Image (cartoon, rainbow, N blue to C red; front, side):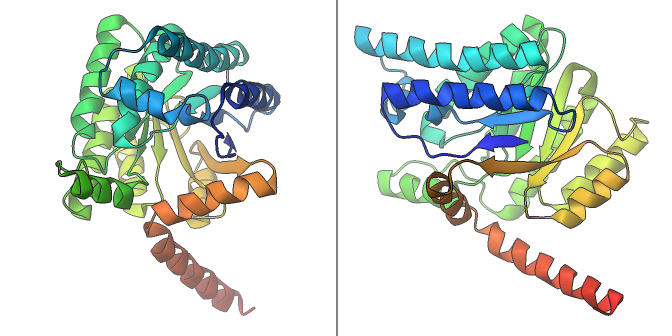
Amino acid sequence: MLDYGVEAMEGEENYDNAVPEFIKAIQFAAGKKHIPFIAIKVTGFARFALLEKLHRGETLTAEEAREYERVQARINTIAETAALHKVAVLIDAEESWIQQPVDDLADAMMARYNRSEVIVYNTFQLYRHDRLEFLKSSQHKAEKVGYFLGAKLVRGAYMEKERRRAEEQSYESPIQPDKQSADEDYNEAIHFCLDHIQKLGLFVGTHNEDSTLLVTRLMAERHLPPNHPHISFSQLYGMSDNITFNLAHAGYHVSKYLPYGPVRDVMPYLIRRAQENTSIAGQMGRELGLIRKELKRRKL
């Protein structure tokens, strides 16, 4: 799964210049049957302060309204190209205080391009205590309007930032009270999506073995084949290969999330992702243990 991972530099010219990079990624993926997805972040095409104002529900000035129309046009150009080439687009989640316009853009693109198949996916961060209900309401809306919901399920990567901001600004944190609550909502979201799998596309973005096994067990119970066209798994490139390779060996649709771009531009993005996701340290330590165990088994 291709992710042009360059941190966005604000400015209309930079936003416009980002669009052809994603068009190239779509065109490249279209010729490779093993690259079914690309990922985008709305903050790569829109000014953060504009998204904040939209999230707050404030009225835009005439100039800001024209600015937002350009944002919509950029996202639509990418989604339209993806639909033409049959490549799916995963719209990443953002911070909670700019998420509403991201959801609105994702809904608009799904309503336009997910009429007969799933091209556009929105991302649901289940470490937020309100996202399970939002997933359910999104599915209800999709059925009512008449399109397929694309649901990428993740736990989330902004926990420290979210809690710190909520404390500093004295509002209720959107983050779950503990990891168990996040795990329970994530697994319930899996149940919900599989209960509606004929009407949505499920993208399971996780490094959690229990959640991965839950999906495979529920698929077997529902007599859903491993290569079901509406169900995909993914892990970050370089992480959780034990999960990825076993899923692939068993015939499931599974991909690696691959950020790419000029090294000097991509490194800040990768460092930020590591800083935002405190689970990475524990995950990498466990994987190192698995590698050592396998080396010992092979007597290498």
